[in-house]
Amino acid sequence: MNSLASAPTISIEKKAATRRVETRSQEPGRQNPKIAIVGGGPGGLMTAYLLQKKAGRALSISVFEAADRLGGKILTPQFKMAPVNYEAGAAEFYDYSPVDEDPLKELIQELGLPITKMGGNGVSLKGHWIGNLDDLEAHLGPGARQQWVRFHQQTRDRMTPLDFYLSGSEESTPSPKVCDSRDSFAECLKSIESGELRHFIKTQIHSDLATEPECTNVEYGLQNYVMNDPAYMQLFGIEGGNERLPQELVRRTRADFRLQHRVHSIEKAESGQFEICYSKDSDKQYEAFDYVVIALPHDALPHVRFEGHRLQAAMQSHYEHYHHPAHYLRLTLLFRSPFWQGKLNDSYCMLDDFGGCCLYDESSRLVEPEFGVLGWLLGGTEAIEYSKLSDSQLFELALNSVPKFLGDARPHFMEGRVHRWLNAVNAIPGGRTSRPIHQRHCPEPVDNRELYVVGDYLYDATLNGVLDSADYVSSGIAAAVHFES
Ligand SMILES: Cc1cc2nc3c(=O)[nH]c(=O)nc-3n(C[C@H](O)[C@H](O)[C@H](O)COP(=O)(O)OP(=O)(O)OC[C@H]3O[C@@H](n4cnc5c(N)ncnc54)[C@H](O)[C@@H]3O)c2cc1C
Image (cartoon, rainbow, N blue to C red):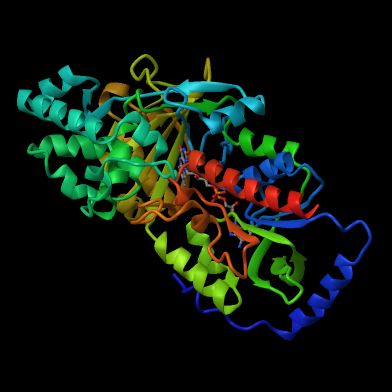
């Protein structure tokens, strides 16, 4: 990935545009604070919605989105051969309400979006179904059962449901056994003697981790382990598709949503405003804003130039601190019917194919599905390696991996889809050491204190985390514009 430091200088074209900006900001009716949100994914849209709610005055909000749609990695497309939805990006929402307040669930309720519970805890190991401890013992032996009980209890002692809930927040005070450990999660798994049990546990969590146990820390590894326990959290989806969340946020937010507007550079001008350089088609344009929110995933940051020594250095340090890329590959297959019905009663299960992947029964989101949809979520090294194969090779491998006890998938297969999400998620969210909350969101608070960053990678790499981040930033800007008014 290119260094953030490799920022060429600004061209003459810019000077002309700067003049245009100055003229525009003197126009009557342009007195409202101008806020640019870069990125129209969940983070950007949540920030815009919350800002409008909290500001207590009119704002002029512009959302710059490089793609031709809003919603980022919440994406619910349809197949070509039948009008059937599937989740191509974020598949589920994490529900922390059994432990404490859950702002994401509250937001979804506030927007009036109906939800469906999701769940699953079965694992298919070489075609053997392990749905409970008795199955585990039958397949791996009584020693493995005892070791599992010990590991599970130790993990619960190290990370309670409240520790898990607070992880990433400033109130977080997890056990030193978790946080002071410089070990990788792979070291932690070595405490399990049985290689077969280790394989089972890795299979259970590999697709959630989106990386390998040696590439993440103990805290994130354990978080991904305990999330299988309903005492820690539960799961749900939005009826009609998860993409209804960004769509509803857009519907309720008064902002200028600019699709196919890619932001290239940001610089604080002498006027004190930030000048944004963006392109629509191939045409570069410049515009000035009072506040800027960078709501981009970590891997998109190097593609934006931050001008000015202090801002450039701060954004470089920010990027390096959070640079722990992780990877997903999602394969989704449409079938003439849900031929496995009655044999898989959960929303998903884990398979030990593809280095450990999650198999979603996408049709379980519907009451009486006419067609069947299965989705494979591969993570980490396998996501990278299998991404190199063609779509049709991947469909073959997916069909071969359907556990025999579910039935013969091949005669029912209609259409497949592949979504490659390399570098799109984070292997050590929050970085190796936790940064204070303001530093996370305002990388250069001296000369560039009106430039904020929103991201899931600042918390836990989930939609809950990106909402926490949007909440913090929208509160900061709302307080500042209120003070100015
Ligand atoms: C396969 C997969 C499965 C996941 N599953 C879950 C899950 O089940 N539950 C969960 O909570 N989370 C899940 N996540 C994580 C979740 O998707 C993210 O937390 C969330 O999308 C982060 O939102 P964001 O707005 O920060 O980034 P994004 O969703 O990536 O949105 C960023 C937006 O910025 C735009 N952009 C990029 N560069 C520019 C630029 N230069 N100028 C303008 N616009 C730009 C992009 O086009 C995009 O629309 C999953 C992620 C993936 C990839």
